[in-house]
Picture 1 (cartoon, rainbow, N blue to C red):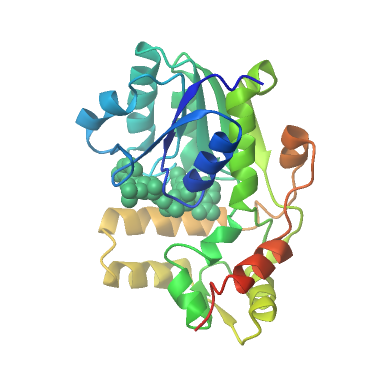
Picture 2 (picture 1 turned 120 degrees about the vertical axis):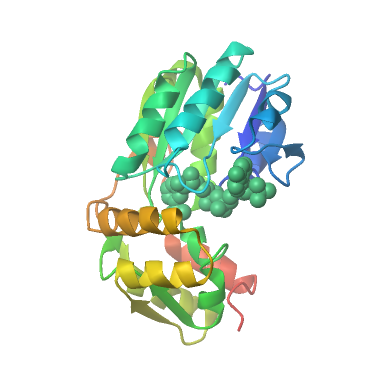
Length: 276
Ligand SMILES: NC(=O)c1ccc[n+]([C@@H]2O[C@H](COP(=O)([O-])OP(=O)(O)OC[C@H]3O[C@@H](n4cnc5c(N)ncnc54)[C@H](OP(=O)(O)O)[C@@H]3O)[C@@H](O)[C@H]2O)c1
């Protein structure tokens, strides 16, 4: 394990990035935590921030916002990855999404940049229900989401972070690999909300809607039209059952089982995350 390195973590205040920072620091790496509001200023849409973010960096973890498969993602990630390699960055990890065809060009841009690379394809994060845009609905006792009754292998963002750090420090074992990461259990969104409700000791319901209706609601909240169209397509394809299977990725990478959704629900309930 090579921990004598400085790693740039993009999306460093996000659900996964924050935990990559914690996991990397715990492993003894020097971390540059980057985002628009982060300790190291970095904006995917402002190339003037890129060189400063890359200063003194040996390895970088890439998380593209708003989504790894969004329009423009492959171009921006590819340009950044090539700039990173040009200034001496040797190793890159990319947070990608399982079953997301729209993300393939972004993944390929990282593979082609000239660094040692690992693509980490993750399933749906458990933490989507405890942090970020869905939290308000959960606190209000209702998750409205276009997932029907599809089964999803919810993964704990801490496991993704641990795999990213293993890939950054683990040398050849992870180089040139695309890792498929899931949690240990398939759950419908209705079952996931049910487990959260049981852990939180309150009533919570899941309300499935169509991707089109969900997109219309996002547009009313001010999400730009192009992003809404992308998200509708993403929900219609990525939540069609293609991800309703478990993978061995976490066990292979870390030599242990992935964390279970029930543990996430219990810990977050104890922390008061879903108090009304
Ligand atoms: N949600 C899922 O279930 C899932 C599953 C698989 C893959 N993914 C992928 O995971 C990534 C999202 O990760 P996450 O959920 O951990 O993120 P998140 O919680 O949504 O947080 C977003 C992070 O990115 C930063 N950010 C936002 N816009 C930025 C910009 N223009 N330039 C630079 N930084 C920016 C934010 O900080 P600032 O506001 O300070 O910039 C923050 O650190 C996406 O690429 C998505 O495709 C998501």
